[in-house]
Amino acid sequence: MKFQCIKGTKDILPDDIHHWHYVERTVRDIFERFGYREIRTPIFEETALFQRGIGETTDIVGKEMYSFQPDPDAESLTLRPEMTASVIRAYLQHNLATRAPLTKVYYIAELFRKERPQAGRQRQFWQFGCECIGSAEPESDAEVIALMMTIYRELGVRQTVLRLNSLGNADTRRVYREVLREYLRPHYERLDAVSKERFEKNPLRILDSKNPELQELIAHAPRIADYLDEQSQAHFQAVQSFLTAFGIDFTLDHRLVRGLDYYSRTAFELQSSDLGAQDALGGGGRYDALASVLGSEKPVPAVGFASGVERLLIAMQKQHLLEPAQAPTPTVMIVAQSESARDWTIHAAQLFRKEGIATEVDLLRRSLKAQLREANRLNAKYVVIAGENELQSGQFQLKNLRTGEQQALLLTEILQKIKVEK
Ligand code: HAM
Image 1 (cartoon, helix red, strand yellow):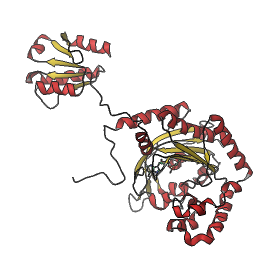
Image 2 (cartoon, rainbow, N blue to C red; image 1 turned 90 degrees about the vertical axis):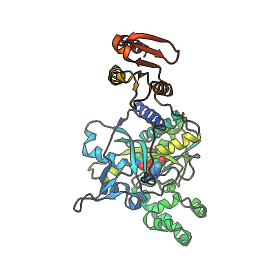
Image 3 (cartoon, rainbow, N blue to C red; image 1 turned 180 degrees about the vertical axis):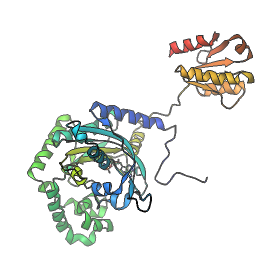
Image 4 (cartoon, helix red, strand yellow; image 1 turned 120 degrees about the horizontal axis):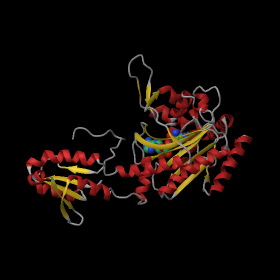
């Protein structure tokens, strides 16, 4: 075969689309129950938006972005690798702050990251997520986490672990970065190549390393929790109290730093033991400085999360939570008994559909027998049979394929009968 979809991308075929629809329906329903409204932003943005928003030292900006220059003197553009920077850009551009004291938006969006493809990691993938913009209060962090957990609970996903950490404010991280470097410096030669690179650029990310040889070293590293300022500490305590009151289990994890630079204070991630190496179902946190980084004169506190749809579906599949495909069944198949009736069947199908009835008609000019076989294959409830005599008399055979019952009726009577039953 000549063409195949690109490595790291996937076709979602009609037999699988109902899983996606089910997840999307559930997610939308829950977001709206929590008072969120949908936002859609363009698939590409100025490259600088992500460079500044996500941070130059992150893997995403450093090596995973699909950037392109549409023409030689145009600015560089990038296929969005995440939604938070785009949402804040839209929030600032359209002055959404003037419309409501709090902006709560959700999205279901496709994203692009040039990562090495593996199970649960694609180059084009989908996320659902939300951003709660305008509140610095810990109850908004807790509510966002509760919202994320509600989605997994209502979908029936089990065996998850919610990891929670606080990254403090910018000063906390500046001080902690140095403390961590000092701790790691004597062990520098033991670090792997990736960690050596991170040592300079972003030492916090070393805590994220899955290299088994570094686990001991990381386990004994100084903890960011010991460097939190008083307000961040109080904030973190309050988030934990809310979660406990909501009945949400969590594990404090001082190693959780997340792969995007905009976070401050709360950071969280939901892991699943059903996912293998790429075990994060979703994650998020507070990002109070992002709007200022993107040019806002006023500070805009915000918190949000995003979850991978493909990873969710992998976990649901492993936990037998996905229903088998069900092809849509037509109510009626209009069948031509003779060649002369074909045109009539095509017109009649349009009429039935206009009346709101799911209708099939033969587009392959098949024999009567083959058309009836097709009606059975499609599991149609009725067939309407039209031949020369029927066209003359205006009365058509309506056969109920479930009961075998058959009667001759005028077209108007057939429509009436089916509509009443619907
Ligand atoms: P993130 O941790 O980069 O956060 O991505 C969130 C989720 O998207 C991951 O936990 C994972 O389920 C899924 N994901 C990420 N990369 C891939 C990939 N290559 N293939 C498949 N799934 C993937 C963010 O994107 C932040 N914008 C979340 C956020 C919202 N923080 C605040 N508000």
